[in-house]
Length: 88
View 1 (cartoon, rainbow, N blue to C red):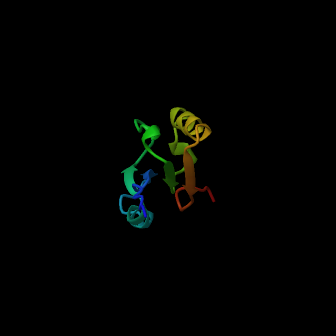
View 2 (cartoon, rainbow, N blue to C red):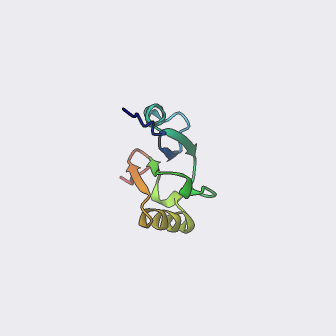
View 3 (cartoon, one colour):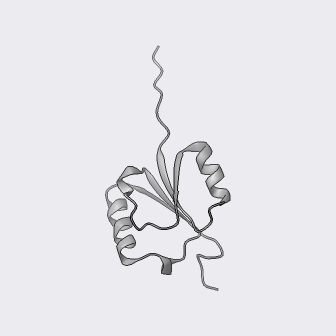
């Protein structure tokens, strides 16, 4: 019998909160890097990008273009809402 050990997928968590509870959960399951914005991030290094409580206004046109290209190439995207995400 053969056992294959698969490395944990790398994901990028973009969050304004350095102590995000979501980070604690994600890091237990994935190799998780964090950033406060997408500017300068090389998304091709990640299997998925998680936007945690990010207001649309904080995403530059360049960042939106990077996300569009990334997802069109098969990258995963998860958007999580919160107090900063929505106007109400």
